[in-house]
Structures are given as C-alpha cells and as structure tokens.
Image: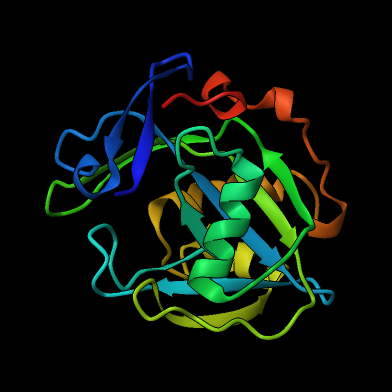
Length: 195
C-alpha cells in the first residue's frame, strides 16, 4: 500500500497516510511533486489524466504528478513516476520551483492540498508509452504556445498546472536554461521524510 507524507504549515513531516484515502473533502496538507518534460526542440509533453483517476479525471495537465514515498528523495520519486506513467527514463531532472504550494477543490468537494515542488525534465529518449491507468492521452506542444494559451485561458488545464505555468514563465522563455535550485531550497519534509 502506497503512503503519502503529511506535513505541517512549515513543510515539516508529521506522519503518513495511505494514498488511497488521503484525498477527501478535508484533505490534509501533504507532500507531492509536478514534473514538466521537455524535448530538445523545447516542446512540452502534456498529458490528459485517466478518466478513472479520483482527482481531476480526464483533465489536461503537465507531464506527470505524484507523491514521494516516505524516505524517498523527490528526484527519485519523479523518475519512478515518469517511468510508471509514461515509460520515460531520464536522469536530467532539475528542481525549478522548490516551494510551490496549492489548494484546489473539485466540484464534488474532493480537495487537493499539497506542497508540490516542480521539476523540469529534459528528455530526448523514445516516445512516451502512456500507462492507461494513469494517462488517457499525450501531446507535445511548443512551450511558449502552451504557456500563452494557459495564461490567456484559451487552454483549460488542471488548477495546479495553471498556477505553475504562471510561475514558470517568470524563469525565462527557454526551459533548458531555467535556473535549478539546490535540494536545500526544498521544504524540510522534502529534504528528509519520515516513515
């Protein structure tokens, strides 16, 4: 059974909860991550979440999201989920938004409440192979076009992706050149998790 790391307002680990039961109408604050995969042409891999997912099913979003297991370094969690969801194996994983946090509520009342550092992944490997339990569809799109379409409201995406794109645009027009933050910039729970 997978567990997520619960955190306090200062980002310190305070326990764990099964992933299967953590998302409710009163979801506790917990640790997660988002990843944005770019190819050598500067295109972003966007994904449509599987329709069976309990949160934001069928919604277009960034390349991959997930939760680190207790005691799992975030960089390793990113690689694990990219492989699981998309068959992508990349070692070029850089932390770009170390303290991103958001809270969002679905029409059903189910809530996301996460400290969710954001990673940029550079990958020119084989084309992704979506896991149908996680991903319904994928699309490669020019980053500048995607960012502008999200900012203008022309393209509908998950609430976390919308806010992340707003912050990522401030890092500059070339994702390959975005500054990478040190692990020490992460919230405490992401530097050292608990069982």
